[in-house]
Image 1: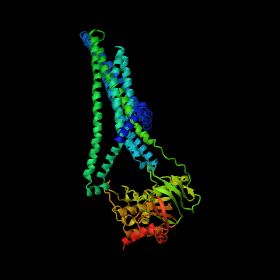
Image 2 (image 1 turned 135 degrees about the horizontal axis):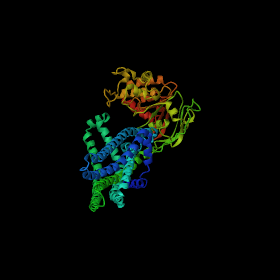
Image 3 (image 1 turned 90 degrees about the horizontal axis):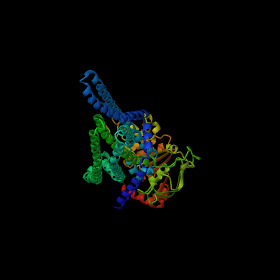
Amino acid sequence: MSAHKGRQNSGKTDFNRGFRGAFRFSARAVQLVWSTSRALTIGLALLTLIAGLLPAGIAWVGAQIVDSVVDTARAVQVDPATSLVPLFWLVALECLLVVAMAAAQRGISFCQSLLRAQLGQRVNVMILEKALTLDLSHFEDSEFYDKLTRARREASSRPLSLVNRTFGLAQNLIALSSYAVLLISFSPWAMAVLLLAGLPAFMAEAKFSGDAFTLFRWRSPETRMQLYLETVLAREDGAKEVKLFGLGPMLLDRYRSIFHKLYSADRRLTLRRDSWGLGLGLIGTLTLYGAYAWIAFTTVMGRITLGQMTMYFMLFRQGQSSVSAILSSIGGMYEDNLYLSTLYEYLETPVRASSGTAVKGADHSDGIRFENVSFTYPGSETAALIDINLHIRPGESLALVGQNGSGKTTLIKLLTRLYSPDSGRILLDGTDLEEWDETALRRRIGVIFQDFARYQMRVGENVGAGDVSNFEDEALWREASEKGMASEFIDKLPDGYNTQLGKWFNDGRELSGGQWQKIALARAFMRSQADILVLDEPTAAMDAEAEATIFEHFRAMSKNRIVILISHRFSTVRMADQIIVIQEGRIIEHGSHAELVQQEGHYAHLFSLQAKGYQ
């Protein structure tokens, strides 16, 4: 309950802050639309101006037609042919204005439709471009995912909505100004009545827009959980366990319960919003009919003509619609600004500045050094690595041994600059990693993580992903696949390297776990210039014979390179030149296989346990 109240209080703070700066993103939204398509933006502005001026002209011509009918009825008995001509011209003029109004509205719809498509793409690209600049820590932060979810759900449509409302506001202001010129001749109080009648409903709408936004921010975690449950229930990578363990009904019930929780909040807000809207909207209706009575009385008293009465009736009705539209546009702009804040909050997420410029180290023969390196993940109270010291020279191999969660993969994340150490330093070729250009550094490293990606793309593209500069190079695909021992089964696939993998698209083929790992190995070998190879459980899905073949082949291909291996299989680990044993983030043993077995410590104990399993 306290967390729920905390989120509600946070939402109220956001609302108050948003109300004070309700329109702070309007200029940025207009600039965004302008930069998306200047031609469409100018066309939309001109058509809006025309659509704003035409209604008053139509009302004025309508009044002239009514008065002309009265005058013509008297004159037609004297000269029928001549007296009807002005009336027909007025009717033709009103028809022309109505056609122009319809054309302007159609043009506005056309411009908005094209801008909506272009702008939706533009904003989504901005969101994805920002994602490419973020650190791994952002993607491992639940609050960041809430921020990203809000940006992707609403913000892509809000800039155009804000600009449309801005143009709509301008159109209705122009129309209202033209109405005012005509209404003032009836009474200076007429415009005041129109404006004041719409204010109560506007204030209520602005209040409930803020409440809706508060609700939107508060329920981001629940919305994200719904999306996750949809993924688990409806994707092939979760389908096996969902069916085998009978998880479907339970997860679906959880999905429904989240919906009912969100729906209840929506229902309460909708009931309050519509109840207040109905009550306050009656004020505007009563005002309109009060104005009608006022105009009718003035006509009966002979102060205005029948045509003027018709015109004022029309002006009051359209004027009230314009006032309502103006206030609605302002309320909508306020709401759009609130939602746009989620987009710019995401786009302005601080990014760690990379100041490194080095593309080569001071001493290429020095290899990799970890000097007193410690690291704790953001938000965690337990250190993942503590005072790590190690040195790997070119041509050497290092194996990391330890329980899951001991810090082995974290060490690799630091080496590849996905994170930076809290203390100590890491050097490559005698130069601190902080001084390296990140692109140049990562070009030196070929990595296979145990949770490597399985891209729903062609086989060749899955291999080519290891070197984006040679992504479409089929010759390199084949060479890397030979090194990764994947070419044998790839050649047997229906379309070879052009076979679609995964089940998301037509004719997709699914591979076994061992085959996917060979694809991942080939991907690492795509980086022909990489002289550091990092393999995190690279053969976990392979049988022992395949693993032995892979590593014999791998050792032959890895001369003059630094190889870092993480594995739980000691038949593989023992091939490394040096082995370190990590426990709870610390190095507790360090040496060759023979040295560690002779020490009869933790490594020797684990080795003997695994050896017994084969006896």
